[in-house]
Length: 97
Image (cartoon, rainbow, N blue to C red; front, side, top):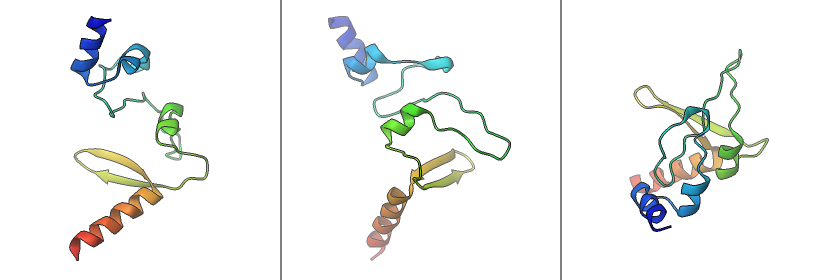
């Protein structure tokens, strides 16, 4: 148990996260706390993807939710729930005043 606790501390995760970690098909190294590697998704003919179930659960994404797609040519694509994006825009507006 002590060794497991030390390993969890090194990776900045809980013991539960360490014990229940599923690397999936990617076999990626253990991600830092709060960071996730959900696996690979395949882009369909019309550009659609399926967001992995674990990601939908963690980020509380439900059918009918509207997602904002953001992109940075150097860093990649990000998805934000509409209400989170709007809250971010409002916060930036308040910082300008």
